[in-house]
Length: 190
Image (cartoon, rainbow, N blue to C red):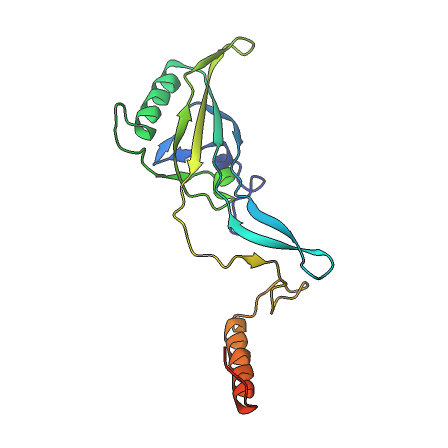
């Protein structure tokens, strides 16, 4: 059994979103845009046939929309409270980056978010309730990444789906052996 959240095992957490420890009020109707897409470029080869894909890194989710149904006075009051936590009134500072807890949003590795926009409550005539939409941006500090041409990962087998934990050391050893061979044959080390 996996330790990952599974709505068939426990559906409770899937209906809630907590931002900065505060529960999004009302009934969560929809969560959209909580994906971190990989960025790829296609490059045609020079003096070769075909093309290659070049990975440029992982993008951020820039419009995570949480739609909530506000069915009573308390949920509307809590909606205002959440607004003031996400974007303090009359603040000249940037909105805070807050932790977010939701299996739907955390699935893509999103763990901190910041405020983009929050709609005022809107009356849904057909349902007889107020609706709120919160739009957040994924907050993630930049990290170094090895971008470049897509390549098959060494040490990985399709059937086992495991990576050899010593592969990086083996690769470094093989590069060192190649340098030694080049020097012993009168070549230059690059």
